[in-house]
Image 1 (cartoon, one colour):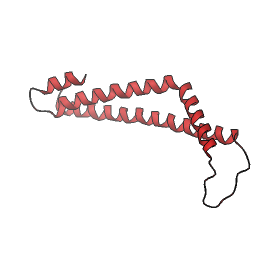
Image 2 (cartoon, helix red, strand yellow):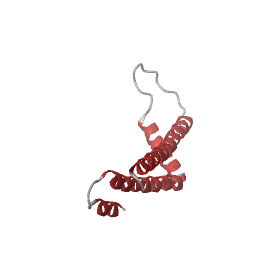
Image 3 (cartoon, one colour):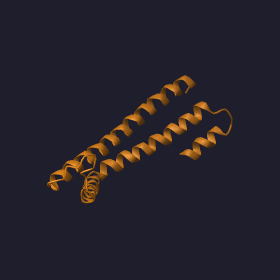
Image 4 (cartoon, one colour):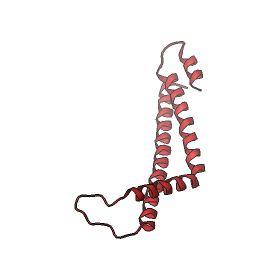
Length: 115
């Protein structure tokens, strides 16, 4: 494959990698937001109205962390699949970069070591 073809391939691979990472981050935000909603629903109580102080107690934080762990466990298959996909994409991007931008006989050895 020619160098311009590899550069085009590399840019497509990097875009796919960014898309996968964004998907994983979206799932993490969804889990966090749902855990926060579940915590506030579960621990509804009269809270003091201190000015400038946080109304989020240590008990709230513990409940929130428990919900995050529970929701993450429920979606572990999807999260693990995306993490494996990211790892494969990173290795492939490294291999294409090594082929495209290195000059010398050691580039093939570098690509084999990365895989």
